[in-house]
Length: 435
Image 1 (cartoon, helix red, strand yellow):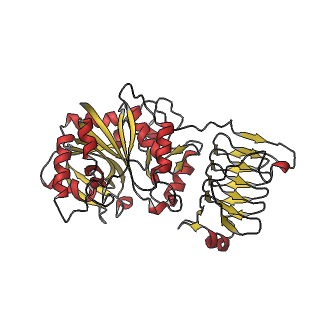
Image 2 (cartoon, one colour):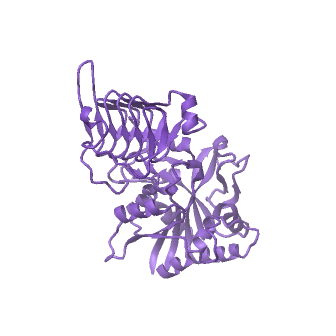
Image 3 (cartoon, helix red, strand yellow):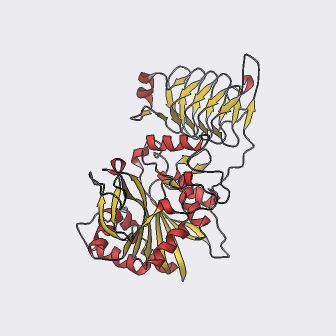
């Protein structure tokens, strides 16, 4: 028997992040130049010394599985693991219908591990959490279920999150999924406690709740919509853990409440922009609580040319991953992934460039997300012509342009799909002889 089994829900379609999720699961979407979104949930569990983790996958899981195999291979002889568990349709020929159904269809995994408690966490949020603190809270209260919650302004919670109503002892006495008029948290009428989609369960209570829910034909089989309200109505010991009180070694008050739901393209863009700020609200440089990932084996990033009145390779208020070459061009307020080649006289500002992409000479890019393995030919402008951008790319409600994976934007203005992945190499690149 083990004390805690971690289960990370990583099977959602992530449709609001299209086209970034056209070929990958949402938790596998790159973030912050070197990470994948799932790295944050995994790092929180590992840093908290929970070493038995199952990742429940479903849609577009190939790149996620590869990332787990390369970057999250724990010590087998010690019995530690991060195992992907593909959807196996154990209850019929259907995908998971909700978060609770995903766990129900994988009860055999829980039986095999035989844990005292089960931590069920989402794999698609950006945050740091000392999960051991939440676990101690859960055990001390002998809870059937503990729900991680974060205070947010009431106007932001309305119609967006599951909202908890709690008593003075943090026991949940009411729950509403995305209410238009959220109830305030005790002592602070301007704030509401919203669910983070992260739970600690007593194993026996989890099994009972899942079987009861499966027998309800009217249920959508979701923890937030169905199971939590049912437990509260039954008077079960269900508690809210206030994430804003979570303690992490090396973190200050400024970083304490950081949690981002990167559920759509604009929120994803904004969260990336936050990490490259001078004083980011999430500290990626706290090595007492590192965000772990698979580091690709590239050379250091390189900046070349410093010609007076001419080419100047520079990056300001930006983060640049290894293997990238900024060659006589300027990068401002941007996030640049691995193995990106930006040629001379180009300008990239307020943008996110995924790995293995090549930017030609005299290109201008602003307010954009460029997915992996793209080629942008000489002289192209993205983010400067609304008609061109809307014709060829996805444009978000806040005007961010998203260029899909394997796209070649030609000098003629034509936009075509590459037949396969493209990885720029300095000696083979179209502009390498004249960088």
